[in-house]
Structures are given as structure tokens and as C-alpha cells.
Length: 502
Ligand code: AMP
Ligand code: MG
Image 1 (cartoon, rainbow, N blue to C red):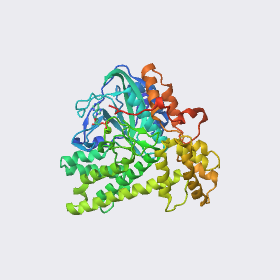
Image 2 (tube, rainbow, N blue to C red):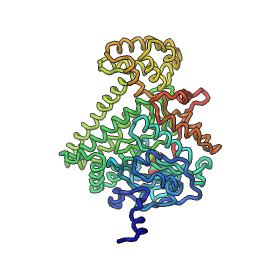
Image 3 (cartoon, rainbow, N blue to C red):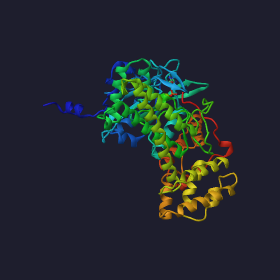
Image 4 (cartoon, rainbow, N blue to C red):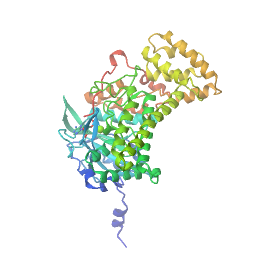
């Protein structure tokens, strides 16, 4: 019999029940690296709901969150590593990038059997830091927190925000800024660039280990397929095609779709210079470093395909011993990505217009609206939300056209749309409800994000940050108390550029 004290120790579950797998891959996959303790950490936000869903000890983590989520206190079971990866940045290949300011603490398996990475971002240098300091500033941390949680609430696959802490230490950028650490949860942090890392070294053994690991972790359903590695390429392409279509449906511009920022799991990752378009333009770009619009709004599907082609290249030797045969097989997948994207995009756009049936002319109807919005400098989000209202009333057209430069310009298109929906049997209020379920009232508007960051930086005031998180948690509901958050920026509030989170 053990003593009562002994029992207590034995049964006291750790606050994060780590169950690691990546750290058990061969050593060339990562560098062991503990986070650097910081001076005076403070927990500024903890995502209790997410912690609960992950099966973590919510109260213990909240109590000790400053130390744990700053990396100052390492929990039992954690095996901190920096992952190795490469990547094409703006089209140029860099054979070694890796986690330069991120450290994977370990993995947890939730109650539904899903595995998640828990990673600190901004927790000190690693062997992959190159000239960087391994640190993060508070602004980008708040930004990633807001946008990733907003994407989640919008129903778009994404990494999540578990916690944000300030470190009490300065970070040196163009100015001195308060340091912070972001805790990110992801289905995994494996990227297209992870495959490129080994491909660039001609290390086929590691590539096969990585591919098999990914199939086990993310795509177990293809494990027994005849050509498993071709099936893997297909599966990743399918998820990315669906994901990027979803981005376009809500006006999201990732801003830096380098191959190291594209996950194998199909989650959106790395919210740096991202933005939601307000005044619609297909070529909208916000990122200060995207000089040629490589990652512009409407370029994203094509860049997704380019990135999938880079993934395909890394898998060629596993797909078929004959290079010619492998190239043909991979090319067919890359071509199919384009068709898949188009199918997802069109289905989502039909839903945004409240169309339950399919007609040949729908694509033209959709494109006519987008062209009109662009010409009339209409707000993307408001246009679709207000169209949802029109689905159940004959009036309200003035409100709809209100964000168009020339409000009269909307009438011919509206008449065409009304004719089109007349040919469906859906009841008006069912149509309106359906449309409101896909056309958000609230998106993380750039000016609101900036305002909340500014208040936090200048006055230590996190109330705007909290308000944004509250309203963005229910983006498809009209929340009258938050009506101003649905509005586009005033001219003086418009954010024209966004910056990398480094
Ligand atoms: P990202 O902009 O987050 O996609 O990062 C691109 C690459 O730069 C990754 O290898 C990062 O780890 C690295 N990096 C970005 N910021 C820093 C930093 N402050 N210190 C060290 N490495 C960094
Ligand atoms: Mg990145």
C-alpha cells in the first residue's frame, strides 16, 4: 500500500497532459531548445474555452499562466523543440528557415482523439534564429490572437490562440516595443516547407518518414491507398483548395503565402501582414513587403496552386521511380486543384447570393456583382450582409446601395438577382437566414485591430482588444450593442498597410 501522500502525487494530473510524437522523430527533424525565461511575465489573455476543449487543467493554467505561457516554467512532459523547415519566400527558395522564434512545447490529444501542437511564439532564440532575436512584440501577438480566433468563429480552418503574455522585457524593432509571447495551437506545424527542407538535401529517407508521419497524423484514410504519396499530395491539395476558397468568401488576404506558411493540415497559419479587404478590389494588397502583389486577394488561389506544385516536387521520388511517370501523376493533381478550387469557390459564392439551385448563368451573376462592387468601391462585408436583408424584404435597397459610390448603380444588378431568386422555391426568410449564416456582419476590420493594439501599447488598455474578441466570437449574429464594429472605417481610420509580425 502506498501512503496517502504518494497517492496524491501519483494521481495529480499535469496541467497539460503532453503526448508527444514529433519529438520522437529522428534528430534531423528539429533542434532541442528550451524557451528562455523572461523578467516579469504577465498573463494578458487566456482562452479558457479552448483549454477546456483540449482537455487541459484550465484553473491550474490560468493560475500559473504567466510563467507557463512565457516559457519561464517548463511543465513536466514538455519536450521543447524548434522544428526544421525550408521555404520559398516570395518565390525565392531558402533551404533553411526553421522555427527561429517559435518553440513547440509538445502535443496533446483531445477527448475526440484529435492531436494538437502547443507552441510558443516569441520565446527566445533557437538554432534557426539566424540574425533574429527570437522574440515577438505585443502588437503582432494581439493581432494574431484576434484574427486567428475570428477565423475560427467564421468557421475557417485555422490555428488557434491559447494565451498571450507580456514578458516585461523590451524588443528592439524600428522602435522599442513591449515583448510578448503568443501560445498557438495547431493540428500540426508541418508545412510545405518541411518537405522542402529534406528534398533540398536529397534526403529521401527523411522525406518518407515525414510523409508517413503526416499520413498517420492528418490523413489516416489514405494509408492503404495504392500510391500513398500521390494520395497525400491530392489530399493536401484538396484541403488547400477548400481553405483558400473560404478566404475569398470572407475577403481575407493572408499576405505572405510563402511555402513555409502553408500547412499540410489545411489550417490557416501565420497571421503576419494579413488583412480583410474593406473597399473591394480584386487586386487588394495590404502587406508592406508585397511590392508586386504576389499575394493579392485574387492571386491567392493561383499561389496556392504554385505552392502545391512545390510540394509535389518534393514527393516525386516517392510517387514513382520513373521521373516522367511521377511528373505526369503530380501534374494531374495540380491541375485538379484548380478545378476543386473553382467548385468550392462557386458553391460558396452561390450561398452568399442565397442561391440553393445551380444555373449556368450564376457565375456571370456573381462576377457582375464583384465587378460592380469594385467599380463602385463598395465595402465587401457590408454588401453581402445587406444583400441578406434584401432576401426577405422588397425595400432596403437604398441601404444595400449605400456603400456604393453611386447608389443608383446597383439597381440593374439587383433586378437581375431578384429575377434569379424568383426561380427558386426557397422561402424568403429561409433564404435570408441561410445568407446571414455565410455573410458575416462582423470581421476583424483592420482599423479596429489597429485601434485595439494602439490602446494596449499606449495606455495598457486591453478593453478594445477584449471587446473585439467578444464581438468576433459571433460573427454571423447581428449584435446591436456592437453595431459600430460592423461599419467600415472612416476615411481617416483606413489602414492602408499591414506589417510582418517580426
Ligand atoms: P514568418 O515571417 O513568421 O513566416 O517567419 C519567417 C522565418 O523568419 C521563420 O524561419 C522565422 O522563424 C524567422 N523569424 C521571424 N522573426 C524572427 C525573429 N524575431 N527572430 C528569429 N527568427 C525570426
Ligand atoms: Mg512563418
